[in-house]
Image (tube, rainbow, N blue to C red):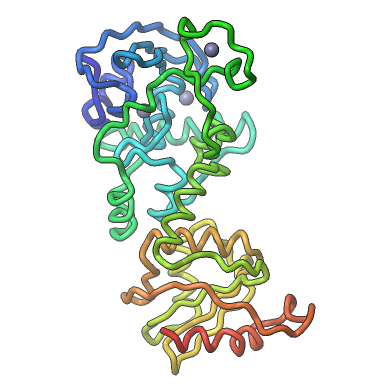
Length: 334
Ligand SMILES: [Zn+2]
Ligand SMILES: [Zn+2]
Ligand SMILES: [Zn+2]
């Protein structure tokens, strides 16, 4: 019987069983699989791996493993859909919520080195896994549990949409093995397998993160010059403590990404002004997923700063002092 979901059980027999999520496996736990040793190159590490193929159920398309078991264990993802095994969510969503940096090798040589390094780590770890979501922060895990699908989502196993039908050219009618439907514009089409694996530039993940932030009142301001986040309800703390908390929660933020950090002790808040809007957005989404930020043992609320009052173009290059003045009203509403 092919192994389900529980990656720890599968770890030892990785060459005999694929590591799959329940959805990809399908409803029948006794599904028959074909196995082809060194059948294909792993789409992540480019090494030959054992390819499994199976039919996950009535009306489903045939599925196969796309990446090797090593790459699957490194990220804790399904070998076929590349979604996180525990929550069924994209890596980019999981890593934002857990405050994990998405490390990715940049060249082929780095790639080999990266994989070998992680393989060594896995050999040393008791369960043979490299990925461990347990070490992550609790509120991020809560958010993931809320977002996660609790049941397998078999609709995902349906045949692909017929590309001829979309162009109005399919002549196969009812015989056509593909779906005759107009695709929804949901970002799926623009997804790239390698990016999804490393948790970067994933439009589907971006949408999930944006929606959860908006549902918590963290909608990014229309005014793109706003690059400031406010931390509210802070204990007495130093700039260094806030910076270190931020580095822990959003490990992708480099010290130089924060243009200024101003603490207003009287109102227990701090203004964190980012050099780039994209970095402010990414941090806002992650901190929203993590339900705020813990500074010196206390969880602070995170909200967006407001637009500066119209002062012409000079506003865009305004430094810390004017951003405090402009956003002081925002802190008043806390
Ligand atoms: Zn691989
Ligand atoms: Zn899957
Ligand atoms: Zn067709």
